[in-house]
Length: 205
Image (tube, rainbow, N blue to C red; front, side, top):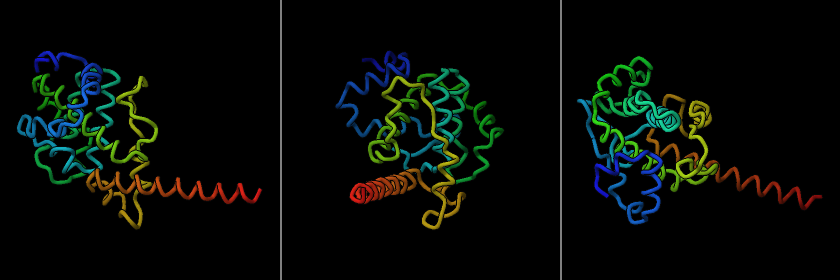
């Protein structure tokens, strides 16, 4: 399919086309950010390589808002959550006023570029899900008919914070892959302990 025709499809149509093409799903190019810079702002590295947990939770929230309502402003806010003047971590970058300020810069970005980043984010998120199945055990919303919603990332942020991962500020700035790997191990371990406890209870009955 010609590139221009592909980006005229809806996000759902693009996802279906990608999912039906196994050779594309296995292609490393799907995880390469097609636009490292937009309107003088710097975006994430390939495969969320330098994306913090704070950045991901804001980007994912706007991403799902766009998938629900298809509003152009939601799409631009999604980009503004990821594209910043520099890639150094600064929690203030995700204040509403800062996101709106960057959104204004990104409004004139060609729609083809915006849609390509929707596909890229969706692909990287799908890979994140496959690597951390316990975190996403509720099912992949990219492939379901349910309205896309984000988990309560702030609650998860507080749950992860502790002796092993540091306080909420330290967790927020950690790489998304590090946080999700930790979460996946913790959930897997909790499931194992729950099964062992159930075995003990069943024997005592």
